Length: 412
Image 1 (tube, rainbow, N blue to C red):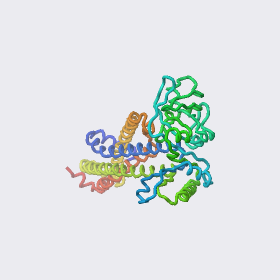
Image 2 (cartoon, rainbow, N blue to C red):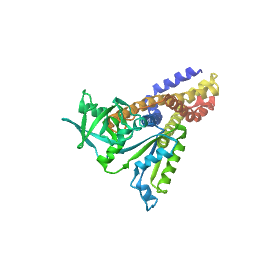
Image 3 (tube, helix red, strand yellow):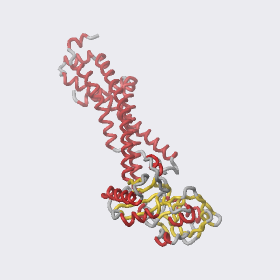
Image 4 (cartoon, one colour):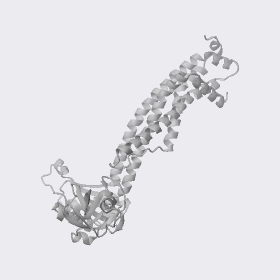
């Protein structure tokens, strides 16, 4: 028998026993669809994370102070936080740092007013290098200058959404807006960017960090510091240099955190990989159950078709012909189940992606988790499902091939 003949016979048997074939394929369908859903969600989440970190700048270094770290280290000495002195030290002493910007967000949401219009917004104090480090583009006007920072200037750069709500189609540059009783002149409007990390640049007002310290916070503290290494290959060395600088300046007081977005991205990637392995194990169990079901049905099929096997052997069919026939049939059953599982899994994955986009509107990421289904996962799932059929159909096929033709013809 040719492979095409065996395949046609296998499909004929599937049509002849529709209910039994469907139940046989059910385990494979569930297993393969679980694999497809898992790969789609994990890879989609990975692609989303990579996209977000690229928007932030994956080689950036984050410097912060966490007082809880000092408590965990049982240190009796604590710092109020990072200050502008720390920023200046890093600028002077760390030659592996090419760009630096302190950031100081005002904890509470601010109400921004212009004439009769008003809108809530996040107020953040930054330095001139912030635009370069955080990939922020100015659509109109200019960004903050070093002179603005030095003179505590009452100027600001507003996000595109704030500009639309306060000014509409009117020009914003040069107009004065009210920020909780403090008047500030708009010198720039940011290009639309959307959410990036934990913030939404379109709903943010950026002002000189010294202005925020003097006029809103009342202390010269810094929330965090963003630093850019001289090259992406020297991120680790730049981090060590910054750490040593801070330790020298503060007599090794614990609590400082120096990390890179790349490290955070890799850590999240490892978590996703572990998550994928767990889901893959669950999907593998479903495929195992499906394979056992295929073996059971193929053994029943061998018993039912014993006379047919004996007749084929009597007219010249060889053992390998019988073996190939039953292997192809079992592979067809599992392969068909795999194709159905791929379609079902892709449908569920896209539905989950659509739901996440609706739920996460305005949330972190803003566009939900995309359904990303690489071609290797589709081909791999189909080939694996077919191989499950071959593996679990091997014993029934060998049993059928070893039947004695005379005894098989006598079988009732």
